[in-house]
Amino acid sequence: MFITVKFGADQQIILNSNCKVVNLVESLREKCHCGPEVPIDLMDDSGNLINLSDLDGSPENATNHLRERHCYILVKINRGDGSEPVQYESMLENLSKSYPELAERLQKLSHPHTRDKWRNNVQKKTRAPVATKSRTVSQQKNRPL
Image 1 (cartoon, rainbow, N blue to C red):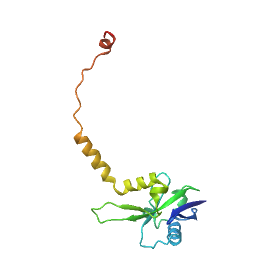
Image 2 (image 1 turned 60 degrees about the vertical axis):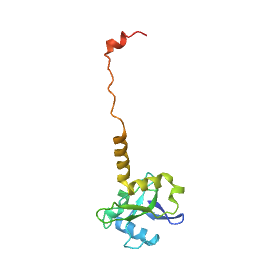
Image 3 (image 1 turned 180 degrees about the horizontal axis):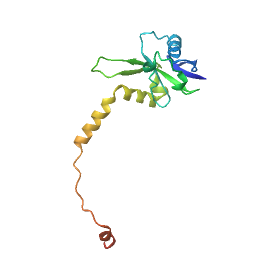
Image 4 (image 1 turned 135 degrees about the vertical axis):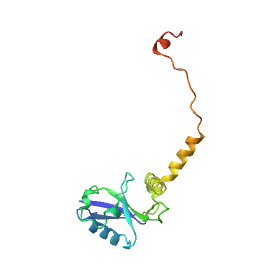
C-alpha cells in the first residue's frame, strides 16, 4: 500500500501508507524537508484536505484516511490569530498550471467567507420577485389558442 505525494519543483515521493499517522507525517516531513514547526496537510485529486494536523500524534493507521495508490499534493497550513481564517498554501510549485482546479479549491478553502460575501451582495442587489397571475388547470385548458 502506497501513496504518491507531489511537492516542490515537480518532485514526488512514494510513501508507504500502511503505518500509523504519526509515522507517515514524520516521514513526510523528513522527505519533503519540512521542519517539525510547519503544519502540513495533504490534498487529494478532488480538492479534499485529509486534515493530517488533526490526526498528528494519532495511533490510528494512515490507510483509514488515505486511498491506496492515489496522488496527493503537499499543503502548508498558515494559522492566523483568532480573527484571521486559516490559509492553505500549496508546497507544489506552479499548482495553478499543473492542477488549476485544485489551485482554485485551495483558494476557496483559504478564503471561505469571500464567496458568502459575494453571494450576499448579489442577493441584496437583485430585484424583488414580481407577482404573477396563476391560472388554474381548467383556465389553462379553456384558453383560446
